[in-house]
Amino acid sequence: MRISEAVQLKPTGIDSQRMVIRVEQGKGQKDRYVMLSPKLLGILRDYWKMRRPKEWLFPGDRADQPITRSAVGQACAKAHDLSGLSKPVTPHSLRHAFAVHLLEAGADVRTIQLLLGHRSLATTAHYLRIATNKVCATSSPFELLPRPAPTVPPPAKPQYF
Image (cartoon, rainbow, N blue to C red; front, side):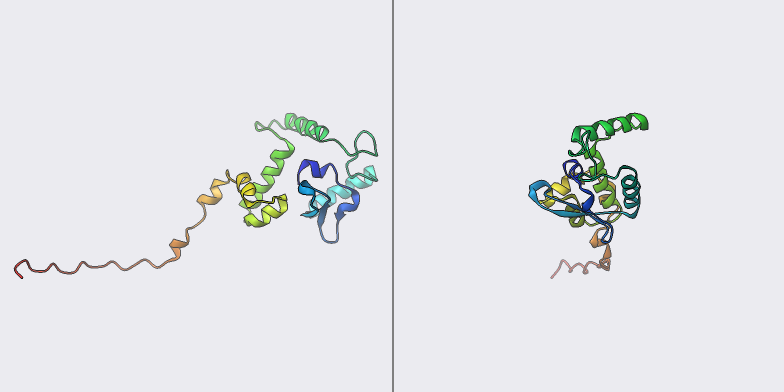
């Protein structure tokens, strides 16, 4: 999910029956659904019980406004500092990691494209370009073909004919 979509989520967008999150008017002004894991559902339920958000799932300083993208970025920066990780932690890097982990877990690229909300498969391929271990570990279909029997060269014709 894009950060611009996450900050606009509403509590009514969480569908625990179908285990999806409804993204309303995402990039390209399209509605779509993204998967909701049981673990995330549990976290969101605990959060909801504690905060009881009304209009926005993640309200900003004012309850009638959603949290800002910059506030989420600052939270990621703080988490990065506390974690001791060397690589940057940004909302976009988390989205990218999500895509790579899906690919490495065996998800097909078309499914990843739909989950990320990409119109073009080329955009999804760009996200996944560094998942080379998956490419290197993929067997070539040529390996399934039977090995041809060695051919014995025909005997040489005598030189005197």
